Each structure stands twice: as structure tokens, then as C-alpha cells.
Image (cartoon, rainbow over all chains, first blue to last red; front, side, top):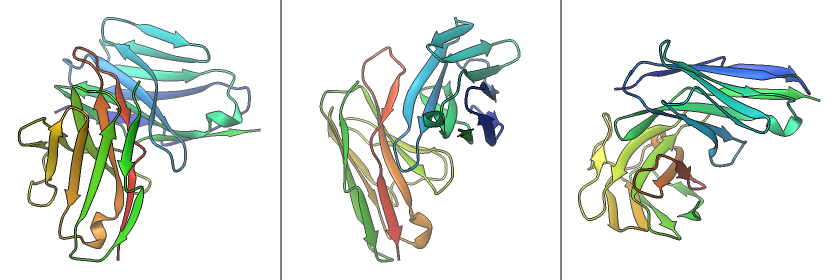
Length: 110
Length: 115
């Protein structure tokens, strides 16, 4: 099955700086890569996703890039704000199911 | 998206008993899944709940321990049987809304503590 690795496990940035979280996947047939944000005590929320026929997707301050050749994809958050502090999970779609990365705990320091 | 609810939101159960968790969606969905999230950990798929037939379990999860029902396109239950402290976790249902789409949304979760 799919194996998704995520780095770093923790990330601290100053408010206003950018944050980048990277994931690699193993299954070259994976065709969909979502990112979820999970605040403490809350459910995971889908914040952005990308399909394998697209190299980059942006939504306001967040963007996702995909390099199919290298089998990695990244989440970019610009102009970070304290409310961006959360755990972020990437996932790869293998077959009919998602395989999640281990998560990145992002802290934005005011 | 859809409104996904779970009941109960939390429970404390004794060792050896069972807990049944309900997941209700306010619209028909194509696929429903059950995940476990242990404290500080990632999301692990338990099974895919199939409407009108037996669930499809992932490696390490068995029907006797985690029986699942999905009688229709909006409702599913997960039972965690013969509870032990190792079953203490958050259990989340997740749905995909439409055929041909991959977006997946999560319920609020059920926090289970086994004493």
C-alpha cells in the first residue's frame, strides 16, 4: 500500500513568516493529495487538495505543490497568523483510501 | 459539504464492555469510513463501511472486535467490543459525498476512555 512520510514533525515560525511542510509518497499510482488542519480537540478539516494532473494550487495564503517525478508534495502557508497554529496532516490516496502522514505541529509565535 | 454528527461525543467505559458509536450525515454519501486517532498520533483507517454489506477491514482490525453496520446511505455504527485500556482513543467517521470526487470530511469524533 501507499506509504506517506511527513516532515518536520514540529515547526515554529514567527507571525508573518512562511511555513513549509513536506510529504513524500511511495505509490506512483496515487492521484490525489489532500491536506488537513486539526486544531486541538477538533476534527481534521480539509484545507486544500491537489490532483496528480496539476502541479500547484493556491487558495489565499495557502498553496500546495506537487512533484510527481520525485513523489513529493508540499504545503506552503504565507503570512502566518496565530490562528494557523495547529497540527497539519498530509495524505495520499492509494486505491480507494487515504494514507495519512504522521502530522506536523505548527506553532506561530506572535 | 455535509453536516456529520457522532454520538456519543465521549464516554468512559469499563474493561470488558462494548461501546457503539453512531455516525449520521444530513445527506446521502457514497462512502463512509471509520478511523482511530490515538492521543498525539495520526489517523488510522479501521474499515470502510459498505452500505448493505460487510465492512472492508484494514490490516490489524477484525470484525469481531470492531463490528460495523451501514444500513443506508446516511448512517453507520462502529462497535468497539471487549474493551481494554488500549482501546482508549478518538474514533472518527469520515465520508465522501459524491461519486467521482475524492474530498473526504470528518465527523467530530468520539473520545473513548477505558478504565
